Image 1 (spheres, rainbow, N blue to C red):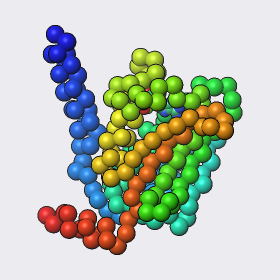
Image 2: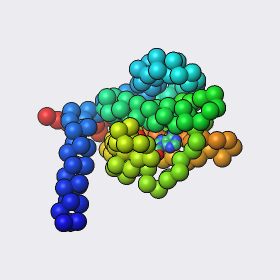
Image 3: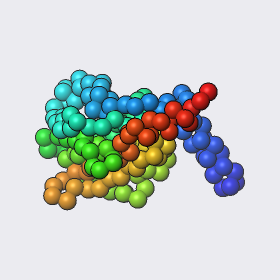
Image 4: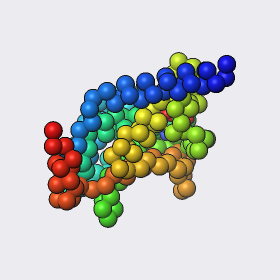
Length: 190
Ligand SMILES: Nc1ncnc2c1ncn2[C@@H]1O[C@H](COP(=O)(O)OP(=O)(O)O)[C@@H](O)[C@H]1O
Ligand SMILES: [Mg+2]
């Protein structure tokens, strides 16, 4: 019975993950700052009405990355929604800082919040892991982020802030170069 139910669970997760990636993934040069601004705009009303302060430090000379803008928006939206839930848990004035920067051949986007911090760092990317009450959390947001970022050749990591309360999530993606545009074009001849 345990085996059967475990297999059924695996099937559900696979279905959900393929649902989340229903559209064939695109590989085009995209500007992450533009995606970040769009994502913040989507949630601006909610943030404003809950007095959540959003601060953007976007590097205007950020190189493009090669990827799927809808999937990357999904990643940023999931992280931002979690940060929103987190900062509203504490009584403190809520604040989320979004930073984009180039680091060598990598583009790095970080989301720093002043919520309660992460309690289960080794489990939070697992499908269905949630600390939220039934009906509120699905535990799928970060596992979807993880899958998308890995498919883009990048990584997603998180840590609790050392100098103050809260957590930071960092997405790292390879910066596009002339060479990678060539390779991408070659990968999609059809
Ligand atoms: N910014 C954050 N601060 C603290 N904990 C977080 C943060 N983001 C995510 N988490 C933890 O990771 C868990 C999993 O997140 P996620 O996969 O998006 O699922 P859900 O949001 O449905 O719970 C959350 O339930 C929460 O415990
Ligand atoms: Mg979530």
